[in-house]
Length: 265
Image 1 (cartoon, helix red, strand yellow):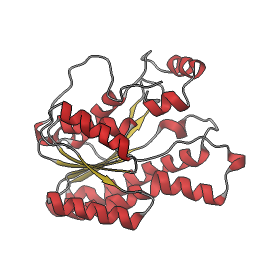
Image 2: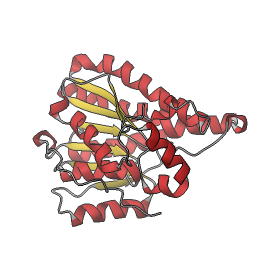
Image 3: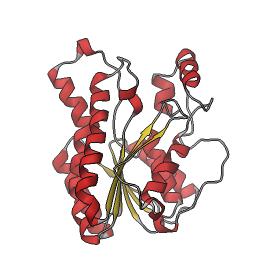
């Protein structure tokens, strides 16, 4: 069931002067929530670089941004984030090109379903590498220049999956729980230097991947029953919380966890 990843109910969203010409790095920005983030930052006038392995979907993101007439067309860098050495090299190239990175959004992840009985040590490691490890090493790459500038915002995209008490993807859920550990630990470390670290957790966001792979009428009915807002949540509106935390408007927020889930949890 194809869906426009930027779709959302009609709304007038805020604009943030502090994001104009700001350099923003997004991991996993070619589709789903990540594509929504790239496009919403671009519409704010930010210089966006995004990392992913999906060339065709990345081209679609860029095409939509060009059609929207954004101030700076996002720059795509093909990299498998599991390869830490390559990831850090590409981040260094982004830093060299733009001079600084003011905002890092750690987003890339994969929520493939699996049962606890079927988990092997190799697949466990794969889930940690795909959903957690690169978060820390991306931060390690950008934090020194943020600390030197005495300003920066790191937003880690978590998941409400570990709150669900369901056995759909234990490796993924454990990795996403670990994101909060990164946030709270490094918020304490970086706070005295003016660098903020927060987590934003999506509920079940209606992206193309979710609708095609996991969404059923029964699951949607159960989700809407649990939500206080009785409709689907979209990537475009999820991005608004991230924009606020990235902008100067969120300057007093750090070490926090924000849920964007329609009141499900």
